[in-house]
Image (cartoon, rainbow, N blue to C red; front, side, top):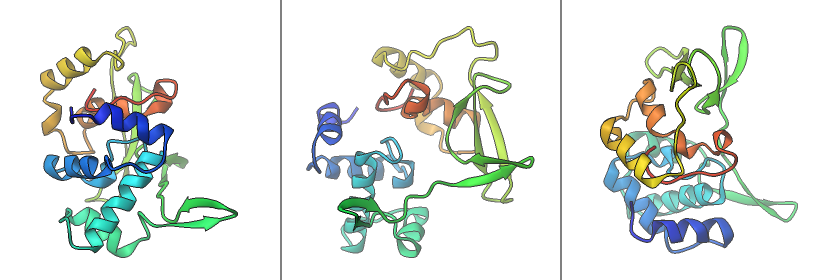
Length: 193
């Protein structure tokens, strides 16, 4: 866990922009994580601040980002904001929708249910087709103890979460399930599950 990360996370939820963004951006770069795979809940203030900081530092030539991030920052308004009716609004916050077997689905947003405990729809970058990935306990008897730091650490070590970077696999999503507050009643937890 990043030193002082927990304190910064509380500040970012409760207060304005904080200097901890440098630390969060550094964590993404050092870990080889795309800033688009933010450690923060997508759409949250902390997530939007991270996108803004990454764009600002990338445009100033202070950081080198991966090809996906560079393409997004060079071809979209990701990380930029504007005032609308007195409110600051993110200009380009992608909410990807796609079609899977004739049904409109959201990409990259895990949900409960399906063949296993959870499922997520992901677009295969090689084929452009949407794939449904099911993961979790088959019969629903096991519980994910995402609020327990020791359980998260043990799960991450056992499943080698630091090596799982392919969004097209169940392991990738199982390791990151703790980041999706819609599954846990509005709370997110840092690190891997």
